[in-house]
Length: 286
Ligand SMILES: [Zn+2]
Image (cartoon, rainbow, N blue to C red; front, side):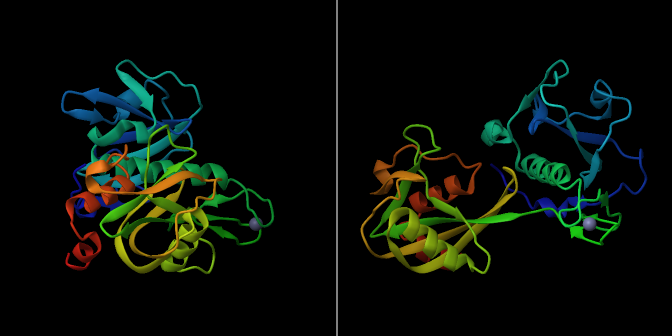
């Protein structure tokens, strides 16, 4: 997956400068499945003409911003909708490495914002209906003043290295044979490092020493942010929790089991390990 500097070309916004001036692209979700068409040039997002096959006046749509001279909107329609000819509803994860990085970022943002929109119709403090704020991406309760921002749930994902081997685990939610690095959600009050040490100990029973930052990735299923770290093995023997993790082991580069593709940060981290004899030192040298 190619990663251009997306934010050089994407201008986030809450409303278009001059509505109707630019071509429009619509990120349409049904049951959080995205409407796309596989064109000869690659996956395509519908324009306003295709949108018109659904509705003349879309309800509850949100503006996302301008990208490469086009205005992007997102819209949730009822589950089970029939796709227009040539189009299909697909899970973002299933679109795979052929789906361009910029579209994945825009569609992920759209999915997260639509999810937040659907979860924040009413104030969690007083129960009154909320409304969209017009000067920032937030909702406000006019009854009690409560502000509700889109929720982002940070999670740590960590590759543990021991004498040139990497720790890979089979999570009970994975398909048979699939292995990946260990991950877990942050708890209030934790630093990235605290979460990494706690999760690794809870899930596989080992202690880690030094930790290095790899990269981060928004993961809109529904609202995670993955923070990728590498950690050095310190002590302990693998003892899986048996709840989240079914099995785990140390693997060498040339004997890896099935691993995730590079749409996920996990897949990119494992490839970093494969490509670098000393992956932690290589991170320091970047
Ligand atoms: Zn309220």
